Image 1: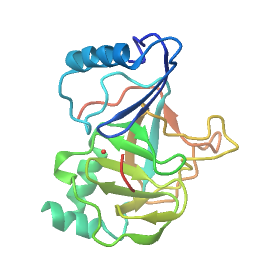
Image 2 (image 1 turned 180 degrees about the horizontal axis):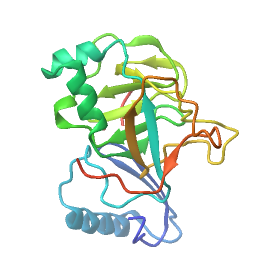
Image 3 (image 1 turned 90 degrees about the vertical axis):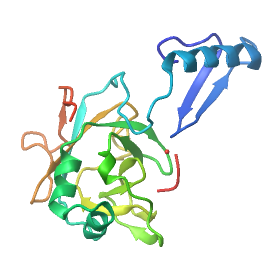
Length: 212
């Protein structure tokens, strides 16, 4: 819809299986907009919300360097019937892209998760998940932008700053952004030349909104 917006469209807010549409009632009406949406849906067909969007985002790819030492890595391995090493290999071997953002400022729901890594949320959420935690739940990977409660499975940690009010834009992982997860054994400090989060402009190879 962003590439062929209907008259009167003001804003789109995507989620896992829904889209909030804000429109200008002086330029269109609900019936006319509904017909446009139905036509768009018919052209798009049924798509997997976990698949990376076909249309690339406007920004460069972001490389997230992860220490895969999370407290739930063994649990994810057990739930999926894989070894911890296989969990890491599948996670780093997939093509990821931000599907949408929600829950908290800068929290990105990153699509493209290997189907073999899809796990439900934890039965018991944690009262505090540290900033930088890399986690899995359902169809998505998440990188916690700040310390908060959370019910996703923590498989690792990154020093990448996902949200910074002093940065423009503050959110590093915007919808449509390609994401590369790379295993590292040492803390991330950014690129040596700049000390800022590493980004790339190349396209990655091919290999729902809810509570976090």
